Image 1 (cartoon, one colour):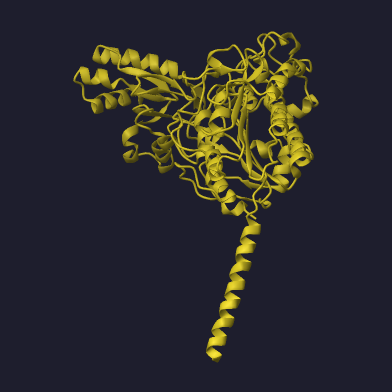
Image 2 (cartoon, rainbow, N blue to C red):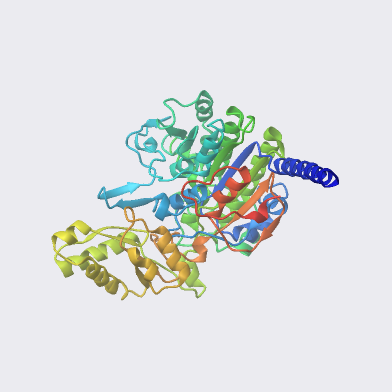
Length: 547
């Protein structure tokens, strides 16, 4: 009898303990009302700290760093390090080998033509008369996104909306099942969408477009925020011949933007005001779509693109780039304050990362005794066409994208040539160029005699349908760029080391220098939201960030 009573008592204690445990777990897993995913196009990790003293106490970056959790050793794990691949990886937790987005543009080996990452000729533009600007959808992505999984987990009650100045920066993060995705049309000055999502813009988007905020922002012109000595402390000189000229002859500060009013709506992309415009669109989206006001978690993706346009034209050491990040800091601070007011300070969760980073302008490096140079894809293609014509009597080159060489397999077969011999002949020729470090046979990259990190990035980036045959690995500082400005796309840390900061509900304060990867973002969000990982996810949960 005593044993029976003891067993019963133990059972009661165990039962109460289990219920308490379940209760605690439930309380700890309360989900935020809204997740805001922020991608800053071309943001290097070091910008978080390089300009830290210039960021405002009320700005976004100090708030993220001082109250959130920073993963300071986060890398892109594939090639090429470009916008479309980056946005896809962040939201799928996958790599081009699996999700299918192998570049901003690629040569499709089955279709035998070039394909843009978001192109979809079966849909039409909604919101402007620019026909090709809206012929876009996420159909080229082969796997689900974390935003798709949130929709699936809530029986499509969660609202998911994507925003960006670039089509690919809006469409891909929002996923296949999004309620909407909006992007900027530089010809009309409108935020537009496609018939993939809807047939008519919502009334509130039409009203937002009718305000013509681009013209209002042009009225401000672009003048310096600080004394000249501040820029000389952080940057190169105000103007160098190797920087781009997106504003024509007006090649240095101050920039007269009023001249573009009601004439050229695209110029705003190369100014900090592009970020301001997008943030205003985000605030209007939150208000009019009641994001964060539902009984399930909503998700807003916001990809700031102007940082990329400014970076490409002027480079990391320019006055323009410093200005852009200091002003973005203020813009983010304003957005977070708006979220505090409308959703609630402890009711939303934010992560901020980048789709890729970016290199220094080659001539700037050279000026300081550091190697760097330019080698455009179009020049490589032209050279290889000539070489294969001289060697085989005809060109065997279909395309070159991001130093990825696509060989015409059908022509090789018809000429009864051995493909491996052709690849080896082209590789031997390329290795004679002093800009080349190594040439990798992509389908056989796993056996290549190159460092494991580079090997893994090539393997993760290879897709038989949408990748080329030969990956050119250039020496450090060599980039696929025109005569001025800079670019990105290679394996090196200056292109692959990105920021990753978490903030808000459920996130503890701190940082880690443990190596993490872009693929881990979606995996962590899935764990955080208690939903399934995206269908192609290969990332791991960053457990350190969770309270």
